[in-house]
Image 1 (tube, rainbow, N blue to C red):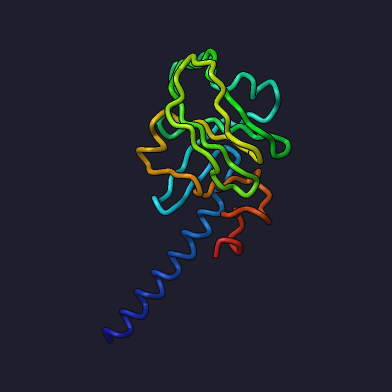
Image 2: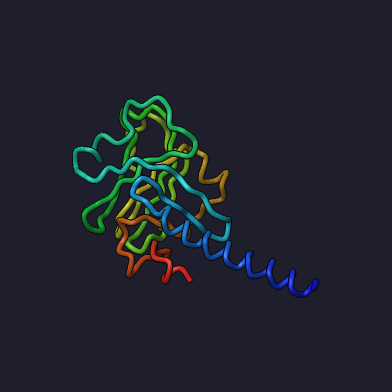
Length: 166
């Protein structure tokens, strides 16, 4: 009798894990990014900026950014990315991401109003801006994987499709 209950409990736990995996896939959405690495995982709701005009505006003149929010800059093709903080009122961390979704460079605590160029390197497809200091607090590091549906899912380190995650 005990064995049957244990087997049933294990079966329910297995079903729950599969359902959680499917829910994670369903949650891969244009207005969210997930990050993971040896440090753990994090999720941010994001505003996507993917035109030259919206990328030029970025987070300028905004007085705050919710802790779990960010801005995701997406380029048409990999590029040499460089940012500055002109007219930006809040400190930011900038995570530069390659076409596979790998965080290739992190610039910590960019200073508000500073016009010094912030180079992110070449082969940058996306840049995630989050509140300054948050990358260190969470332990986010280079090499971390970013998941987002705008990455080419066949090459992504952490694709949105369930079959690719297992």
